[in-house]
Image 1 (cartoon, rainbow, N blue to C red):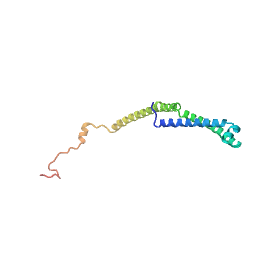
Image 2: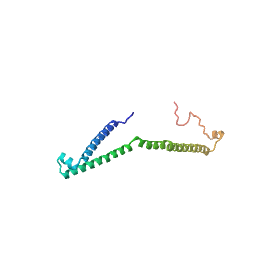
Image 3: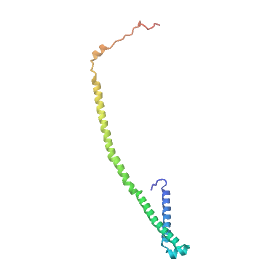
Length: 156
């Protein structure tokens, strides 16, 4: 199985958090279940008010741990592959199969129109000037002959 870099560290941190949460849950549950008058006051040497405060704190901590655990489970569910895979496949499918095909159709049609109109433009450009007959072309041409005594030419 291919894993991204740092995945093993993420799994290790997740296991450590799970372990710490389990210990904190067991401790707060045990502390919250101790009776105030006979348990906490005698074991810890506390007053009634102090034992009640610790018991309340333990019960609040126990409930908080449950809330945090549900939040982490919810976060894990949100970040799981089962959540991202449908989103990814939907976007990729839409991009390649729908938008990509319509984009290629647009490119093909515009290229076809450009090539047709370019050929028409070249055809009309050639048709702009009248065609001259070969005899008329020769008559219009100047014939220059080589003259040895032409001015500006020095003799050796």
